[in-house]
Image 1: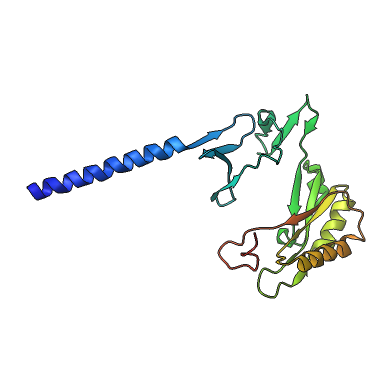
Image 2: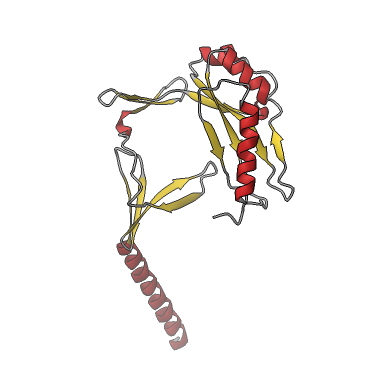
Length: 212
């Protein structure tokens, strides 16, 4: 009986210490969500971190840097269309209004009805120009549907930009990617941005895993 009593006492002490530790952690770490910005901020040991999730709901955090200005959006001006589910932003006082756009690549298929896209309310499109393979070869590859997609979008009167999926690991490769993009957009008078796209490769090893 005495042995059992000692076991319970030990367990109680462990639970008490755990509770104290949790209390200390709560005192040191504070998470708050700003109602007007929609941003979730974690404050720990005097430092502030931006919390965000990827499409698979994995949570990440990035340190907020004092010398990098924050956006001034007031997310109370954000609304959701009940029929489409699209989110829009309209701040009449500051003259800021969001625009509806999509990104497309060969994965959206060979036939896109661009007139129907425009009539649905889409105003701009960002088209994948190509990518660098994330394996050891690092080959530069043009998206199979790039030329067809960019011609179709522009013919439909949509503002058009492009993006390139980068896997550059050296300055030389970065220049090579830029020249590849310039060579392929030169025939087109695009009005939209040229987007540098870098992503984490989940479930596999990528040549950029060591990039910082």
